Length: 408
Ligand SMILES: NC(=O)c1ccc[n+]([C@@H]2O[C@H](COP(=O)([O-])OP(=O)(O)OC[C@H]3O[C@@H](n4cnc5c(N)ncnc54)[C@H](O)[C@@H]3O)[C@@H](O)[C@H]2O)c1
Ligand SMILES: O=P(O)(O)OC[C@@H](O)[C@@H](O)[C@H](O)[C@H](O)CO
Image (cartoon, rainbow, N blue to C red):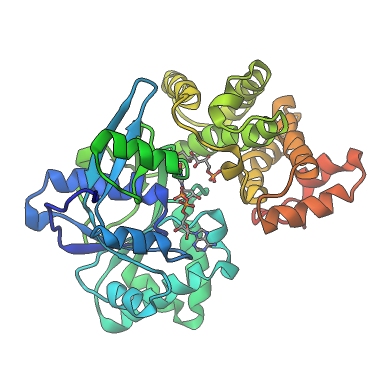
């Protein structure tokens, strides 16, 4: 058995860094949908680089970059083939990275490297800076850099760390690189062997690069694309002047809900979001958290109500096994941005701390103290917090957790 076949050959015009499940289910999928509505010459092919380990590139290359997206609703599965990735490259291939970013045809660079990828220590800012400086030197023209990670003002956050990494060369970037803010949404769990089996049963194809995702997808973008972009708007993406309200909605409701359920659900022995959200107490806590945090979202009430109704169904989808231990990874930075930041804003406005927000922070602290850490950053903060008197822990986190997820 082999994987899905290539029938389209879109020209190389985009690059991506961080060839994980989400890129395959979101940006590459949107680009595929846009390519299907374009003439062959107007399509966009992507050179996708892995962030760290080479395996995803090696697997995808074996099938010429073509793979299956399995959209999984509560009712059933639907398989589509994605051909927009025309080259899958291990991130360690610096030559290929520089060649791609100095290629004048390449006008868009999308990025999914997780929240942790934005720290200087990850090496991501330096790699992007090197590529953009080389592009400026080569006179290869402007490029849009599109962050697709769950961070506030993600485009600006990426711009700042890339400029810093470029040092004195940063001045060269202003002329060639525009950094685009985005809100990206599509619940896409890490792929399991059972998912690959499900794809095999449905399509008859052996596709180790397949991804399973929900039917829902959203992409909201604000910024300049001086060298053009795939026609993502035609396939549902929205270009707006300011992503702020949509970003608050996504981060303070969906992602904060996930962050809370990952901690509190794991403490109760659940494995997935659907299981945790199915627990009456945790569901009530999540609803209370949403009620508190929605005050920070500047969107019409009816629009927000409808979005939350959809979110309840999405969290309840029993056929999407979004594992709590995956979501718990790198939690300090997520708690800082999704729970502590809105709590502090409330305090600055002179309002009392909300019980549901406090409960979410306290649940996270309990998860640090009582559960095995998922990653080194979490282990480090867990040790510090565990050493504090229990009565001081929440106050310490609320007062001293930095946006980088460390205790100041
Ligand atoms: N999966 C989702 O549902 C989803 C939805 C919206 C946004 N996102 C964003 O996309 C990110 C990636 O999600 P995913 O599901 O593809 O995860 P994944 O684990 O499948 O892939 C993560 C990618 O990021 C790279 N990466 C991770 N840490 C890195 C580091 N420190 N330095 C360099 N590269 C690094 C990895 O090499 C890999 O290519 C999330 O962290 C989030 O910010 C994901
Ligand atoms: O690692 P995080 O917390 O940024 O993301 C985990 C999930 O909350 C996230 O992947 C959501 O499923 C996603 O943001 C939905 O669009």
